[in-house]
Length: 267
Image (tube, rainbow, N blue to C red; front, side):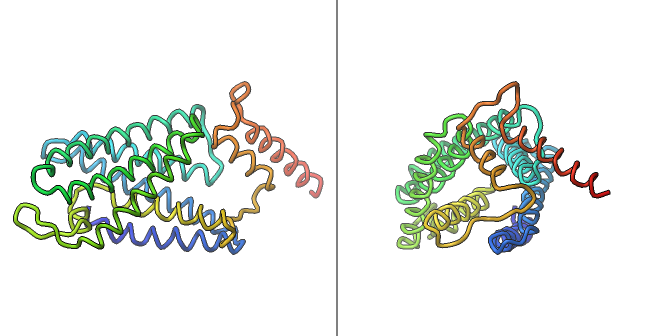
């Protein structure tokens, strides 16, 4: 994965730049975020194809991880550009479950491999992978079980914070005759766990800082504010579709017709 690191760094910069541009009420900020999400999906897809075409034995866990990440990143990008398709929530949920299964297996495999080698490293890595599992579960369950989403996200943040603090305090742990830090151990793992944890940390920081009004929320003037409120209600699982449509979809159709009429009247 190391050859993709420069691209990940660039995408993180774009995410931060896009977020600040959006908070400064520049509408192009949202488009930068959507484009970055799409490129994340493209990178995951390229790695997925590379894994499937590799001459070595295909790792089913890696394939499940990359497939789930590709679907999730593309759907998040589509949400930014207001693109939807039938059963998108179900597809998103299935991709999230696939990612949960992949990281559950990773956690079990890592525990089984480390438990006899280093108790301290085992605990730290379980915290790290556990935080990712909690975050992914929170993201996956939002449309279906919103009451669980926030506690799971909080648990993920707490586990990640404990991992960072304890990993920094215990910088040298003996594993297989080599002194390693937990951060070094994680960086050697052939997966996208560091990318995921960094994304989740950025998202948590944004949510927390906006909640206390320390920073402004992201801005878009493409639709009225009511549209975004309806979208948030649907994504939080606070409403069910009627005849296959959510309220924000009906709102968007009516708003598009209104704008079209205004344009035609001016012409």
